[in-house]
Image 1 (cartoon, one colour):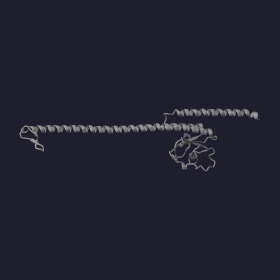
Image 2 (cartoon, rainbow, N blue to C red; image 1 turned 45 degrees about the vertical axis):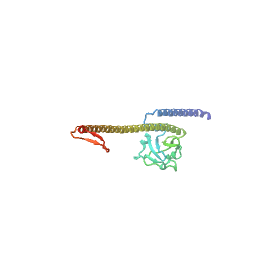
Image 3 (cartoon, rainbow, N blue to C red; image 1 turned 180 degrees about the vertical axis):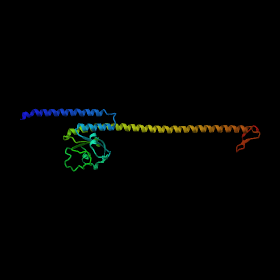
Image 4 (cartoon, one colour; image 1 turned 30 degrees about the vertical axis):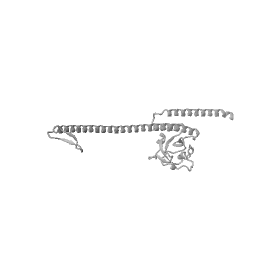
Length: 265
């Protein structure tokens, strides 16, 4: 009996090895494509990473939520296309305080991947979900770290088989690659904004200097004009006094002559 089953078992192992090899190759291709998205927007990068995460883990739904600085609030950033198509909630909450989240927030609280392969089973950590939410049969999510800080949470759900360590690895590698690109795009955006702000300050300062220079030029011109008027007035006064037919003279306090016109002389 063992001899009869051995070929079947060998064939099963071969098929499993082939499937694992195809999955590994597919994962590498996804990572390569992700690394090539340097010119894409943050939304395009996150959407691609999420859809690939759903595909590679053979899930049906997925999501990405970003974390605030003090790890107290999760902001939903992306739902997979299938999740959006299945969700019947009209007003989808976007911001979730971590303390109010149920099972899906455990990845933050435990700071490690959380796998729930039987979502229907009783669990004190669950808080349920609103009417119209996608029905969940199984769920897996991971925290995305930047050094020691959680910066995002990514999750997938409704896989037909059970989630395992391979799925955790697929999701973790994709999300780490995604986050590196997101950080790069944010840094580039911050650099552009800082450059634009610097240019605006330079333009304002240049305009201020140009205005100050124009004002200074105007004042100089007015002073020169005033000096010419005073000089002309003094010349006219001197000419008139010098040529008056009456005596005009000036003395200092000691009685010495300091000026006398032609008539006096």
